Length: 332
Ligand SMILES: NC(=O)c1ccc[n+]([C@@H]2O[C@H](COP(=O)([O-])OP(=O)(O)OC[C@H]3O[C@@H](n4cnc5c(N)ncnc54)[C@H](OP(=O)(O)O)[C@@H]3O)[C@@H](O)[C@H]2O)c1
Image (cartoon, rainbow, N blue to C red):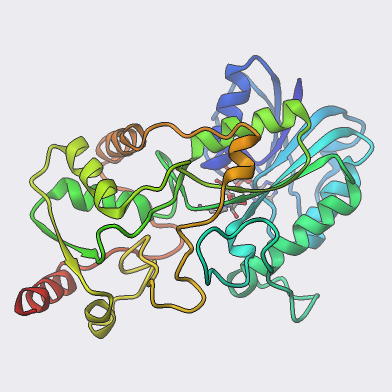
């Protein structure tokens, strides 16, 4: 298959390109040449800007395109316009952030999504989910019956630019008592970028159409089991202290950023963000490697670099706040 990837050099797109090359596909990457230049010398690279600079795509044909770098409908629509007669199938990377509220476990693809109050807004920070919905619609309108919207959950693994999963891997590896959000049996969902990338290549190969929640694992994973996996991989003496949500909030611990992956079960809109229904993606072939592999490879990546990036802003509990919360938890 001749596969075009709009992006492909950072994290998830990288997983797509690696998988496509491993399966013997002819891969073309379209990007600005800024992020990790020199990556994938064995593939074709077209240098351009998807916001107003699509010229390098002119006159070319591909069997399929995977788009992990679309955030605003004007830009995604322009790529889809350019490619509608040149490409057989379009896979757009969306997000479970499209859903208006995670107020119950088992949210499926029919659940209500955000709408853009101002259709002209391109403020991705403020309207990430609503803009992804509009991007999905822009693609589906131009590729009727031959596009897939992949609503990814938290993406993890080596090269993660967010620091969210790497912070936990690093914190558990450092050992000692650490703050964990009670209760220990709360679920965790996340998907390795390499598994999601490989599955999207299959989606493109098979021209699978439709909308898919895409995260893992297929069977529920408890937060305690997840931390224990990180501990075993690091061989550390880390010990989770399960702190009630009320105590975390009373100490100003911000969900998702101060304590990555923690979404309060008491929150009306975000309670069940780690419990979406992935059965449609699993039926369409999504498989996830064991968490132990993701944890091991992420730790090796952090150790090789000596740190981990936090491109969207700082994440993780500071040692001072951690000490205060642990002391409060001991007092009961
Ligand atoms: N991280 C998560 O937990 C999570 C969860 C749900 C969904 N998602 C979605 O998953 C996707 C993650 O993608 P990724 O960043 O890992 O993809 P990626 O394809 O690995 O990296 C982004 C690529 O886009 C290129 N790019 C950026 N701006 C461009 C422009 N104006 N024109 C042309 N190329 C451009 C970059 O190269 P240059 O800079 O060289 O142009 C880079 O190659 C996003 O769609 C995100 O919304 C993420």
